[in-house]
Image 1 (cartoon, rainbow, N blue to C red):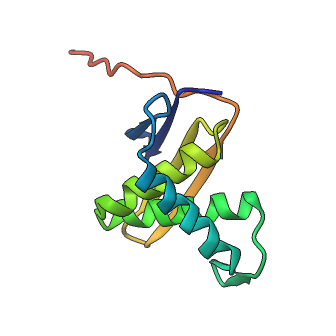
Image 2: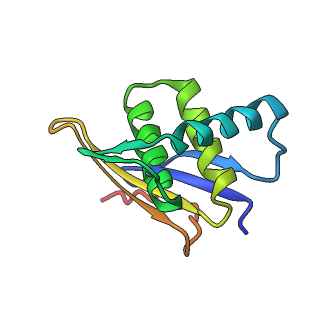
Image 3: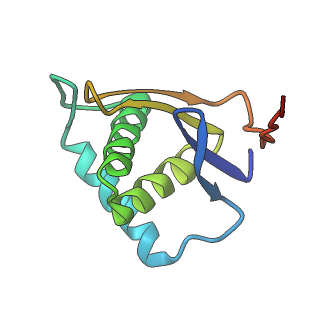
Length: 125
């Protein structure tokens, strides 16, 4: 299990969740309520899923996270980030591309590769 989960947006690290920091009880209860709500079904794209499995739940939460980022909704960003990091301890990255012009969101959930900090290098000519 990795101690961190990183959300990358259009190739740039936007959020990093540190799993070594204990989640407060109130926030843990919120995640439990999210699970209970999803037990009643979720909407993924145009499809209603009555009994979502773990993968479908992760996709639903990741999509909700990305919409919250797009709308700059910090409380929802925090909740969805926490849910993914806590419920999926092997999740290392959420890699997303948001095309604002076409209102498209695409993402991958990466379980097998840790994000490495990149150093931007400028070359002067």
